[in-house]
Amino acid sequence: MDATPIGLNADFGYVILVTISAIIMSWKVGYQVVSARKKFNVQRFSAVCGLIFVLGRLVYAAGYQSGDPKKRLYGTFAYIGIGGMFVCSVVFALDLLQIMKW
Image (cartoon, rainbow, N blue to C red):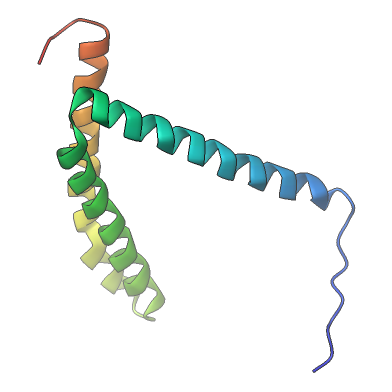
């Protein structure tokens, strides 16, 4: 099998650098999230909400790729996870601002 050359503009290098930067940023933010969860003891609830979200998105993607876009609706339970993470974020923000102590 012969390799097919791909013609890329030299500026595509910027796209690669931005992608690498986004990955590094995600790792850094992930580390900060893990540290904050340990510090504020919200690991389990946030982790469960995150897992629900990820599983919901996987089910959504599988349904969408199945050829019947209506099957993507099976993944709408991801919004339960988003809701839980939203509540955690609000509680965390209010606690940080010392508006409400939980």
